[in-house]
Image 1 (spheres, rainbow, N blue to C red):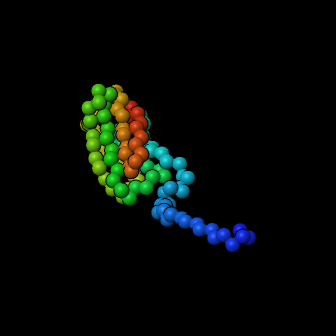
Image 2 (spheres, rainbow, N blue to C red; image 1 turned 60 degrees about the vertical axis):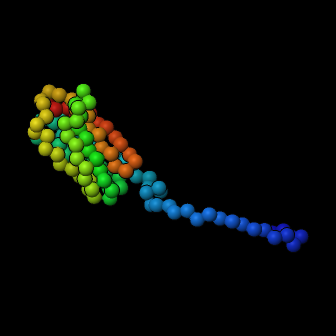
Length: 108
């Protein structure tokens, strides 16, 4: 505190902070079984805020989309992959909020 009678003025700025900004939980996407030998592929999102939209896209190595879906409010997806070619590799891309992750899927 000043002793000479000078006044101190402090200003502050309010900021809105969401819980997600302080969430240190690791985020990951798990796809299984991988390699896929049946028709059902499971996608699990761990540590993501899944209240918004989730975009899932599966592409072949030529960049052609073979599956695309948008869903909401879930961290677990079961996808019928019966129409994929055997002995092939695909890229599974999952976009949730501002995060996007791509995983390699092997189909036997």
